[in-house]
Amino acid sequence: MGKVLVIGGGPAGLFAAEEAVKKGFDVTLMEKGRIGENIRCAEGFFDVLKLLGKPCAGVRFKVDTIVFEALSLHKFDSRRLNLWMIDRSTWQKELAKRAEQKGVRIIENSPVLPEDMKNLKSKYDFVIDASGAPSVTSKLLGFLNFYRQNSGKTVQYLMEGDFSHLKNSIKVGFLPDFWGYYWIFPKGGDESGRQTANVGIGDFNPDSRSNLRKMLDDVLKKEGIDTANYKIIKVIGGICPTRMLDRLAYDNIMLVGDAAGLTSPLHGGGIDMAVLSGMMCARTLPDGPESYEKALRNLLYGRLNFEEMIARAWRKRTLEQVDKILATAGTLGLHKLLAHPRLMNPLTAKFLEFVF
Ligand SMILES: Cc1cc2nc3c(=O)[nH]c(=O)nc-3n(C[C@H](O)[C@H](O)[C@H](O)COP(=O)(O)OP(=O)(O)OC[C@H]3O[C@@H](n4cnc5c(N)ncnc54)[C@H](O)[C@@H]3O)c2cc1C
Image (tube, rainbow, N blue to C red):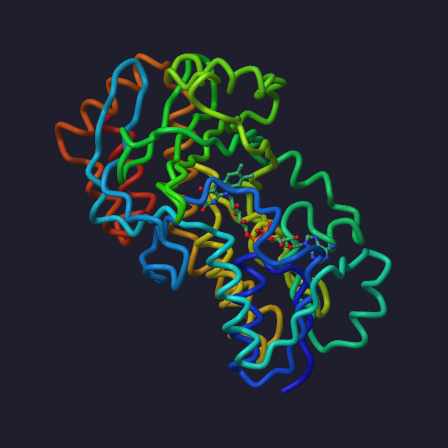
């Protein structure tokens, strides 16, 4: 069928590579580091559209409750959502193994540089850029700023300590005058019984200059996560690009996952869209790059519009109003709408805006 180069061994790249080899392409994947290392993520796998199902490896637990805190606590039953806490490193290593068994050639510790692209474009029939944000292609073609202007910013600690009070649940908190939220996503215990959690904060206001590190430290105090009983093991951060690029294909280069600007405009989660875009890109390769772009927009249009509308409405509300909305949603059971992906359309979003 031809030769495909995949740049990046994150979820988007690994699924694109496996799907392309299944289609009969000769596939090489180049990863700048080692697969499963240097992951920047809170590791909540939310299969919003219910198209993917349970991850094949690395599942820590299925999330049965989401605890929101605005002025008070609100608990939402999430058992009918496809939402799991995972260990991405384990998952990605398993995906890489699976892809290699199917015939993908994986080359680690091999960064692709923008200046390599001209040569690679002619050596391969297709190049799938899954290098995250900002992508290698953006550095080559000069649209690097697009991501910075259309992204949430985050800071996250990997923490060790007793998070057993959050058993099988995750916590999301809101703060006054802040377009964003903080999260406590526990990962449960590992083989040695050591408990960890990803605790972070994300700011989705492009004009904001907040000191996220300081805000996160204040959140820890508020949550009673003190340094006497909890240890910070790792500090990470990064951007969540919340607007799909206007163009996903440039000659024979196609962008997928974060490189395509695909994290949720509402909450910044992007693992599911990385997987979906990677698979979609590979499946449509025989029909040319334009069909990838068309198919992906068709798949994600309703969901992205829904989430954008909800995000816009949320940002106009004060913390008091958000608290009231959460209370009303809980009483009326409106959160159950999320369990039905077909209801994620502009009509439902308008209805919700009207109710609140
Ligand atoms: C703090 C934080 C928390 C998050 N939490 C969640 C969450 O809980 N749930 C969720 O769904 N999403 C979350 N996200 C978003 C999620 O991490 C991304 O949407 C997802 O990782 C995108 O997958 P990807 O494969 O497109 O890119 P990535 O996972 O970024 O993978 C890109 C890969 O390409 C490699 N690479 C980069 N440059 C090159 C190069 N030049 N040559 C070769 N290889 C290269 C990288 O090493 C990496 O392995 C979070 C993001 C952040 C920053």
